[in-house]
Length: 140
Image 1 (cartoon, rainbow, N blue to C red):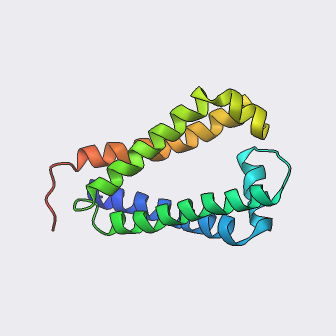
Image 2: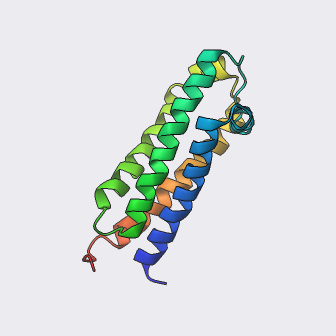
């Protein structure tokens, strides 16, 4: 399989994940609580928390929409892919730089933090490698 096709498939998979999670976080308090639990966080559910998780859901949903655009033509949409790579790096670095806040504020333990970091690093790493391999390809 050509690397550009593999990059497109990875972006579509990221899109599906983020569209589902984003819609769930935005629309369903039940899904919010499930997702926050899976993510390893623990906090009191106030109206502020529900609202802020909805905002995160909107960002995730938008990420999914952008991933679809990038997947449709990864060569032409390299700027979107670069933005994803930067986002994954910033997310992972901030999880460790501000881990004490993450732990104190959300009850996240170090093991879950490492697992989540690995999950995001794999996504970012795969699209970074594939984007690098396809960097000299021209748009069709």
